[in-house]
Image 1: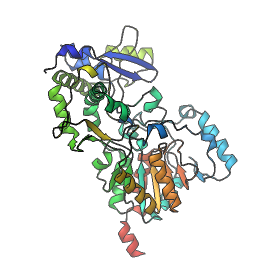
Image 2: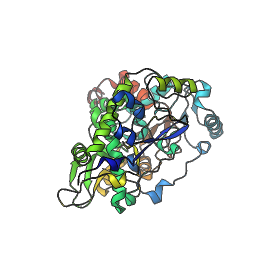
Image 3: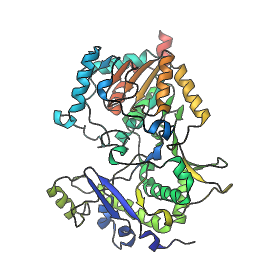
Image 4: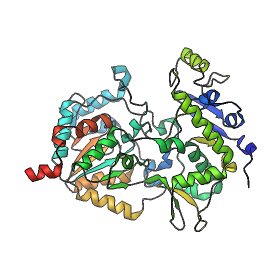
Length: 455
């Protein structure tokens, strides 16, 4: 049945800004007869990435896991931002309490130029910390790397539990049970994913991804296990990758298990929803135009908001609210009320339900994949965790397994992690900065095979 434009005029595109919560009428774009200049305001940020929960083994078992207070982290050696090694538990408590109570901006910490707002604000890695990281990597013969959302924040993809993460805005991912329950739920999911896919698919790897790929190429890192669904490790050239929670770049039939590339599936959605496709195209054009404009990306003061609105960088609402869409963790944008008016195909092979090939909340990791990841953790002699809080058990169990196999555990993550108490070393800084310096260290510029032969 051909899709009527009127059906979409009931849809709402909800967007969030830090400190503001506004709603953009999606029909503004659909009814617009203007070009991208006037539409630039409707797409000031980047569409969201909600990895509809790609990083959980089970909602009931793990999504409610309480955040451990920072001042309860005891029993580990910790390298602080200024290079000091703290071993006394009381000292660690005092340090953590102080860190937890101070806003990074209040103590003069600034985000480096070129680093997006999705990345955390941290101290830069010190020379002593880098030296410890080099010693750790060169001391391992079978180094395994486990990456989480913090590895991709420098690619302008938000994490989940950080200060500006998806959960901080009240985001609630769709569960596996909700997706499978009704066609309306699936329509809602695919409408959001359709609107955000062009942005998500265009995201490029950052320094962290490239550095890990180089470390693999030189023989200093073996396999990579990632909790992320963005495929940025693949784009950077890494190999031997286990996508623990799957990937949004593939669509799977829940009946016959047929895999379809997401690009092909996106074309099917475009054909079935021509009016939405046209609207998204105009939004993309507006976004490209906006990137060429000058002015604050996220205006905060009344003067900045007024000036940005006058220049056409944002759309100011009558009540003073500003429409600046932002990204969530797996490529979606919020389309309220769109479920009844968005069409999507069934499996061409068997007519089954098509779902992103990711592990939703309430779903379980396929057993062969889980066993392969566990085997790598049990056989490595060093585990480097990059950008993960290890909050979900599917990732934390790998850190536990590595430690039980007497491997060294190093955490390269800004903020608290579930493995703080069992880690041998922890460094809190930007993953891209630390790993790019690590990969360029003279000790790692010699391929490991040559280094072993020389020894």
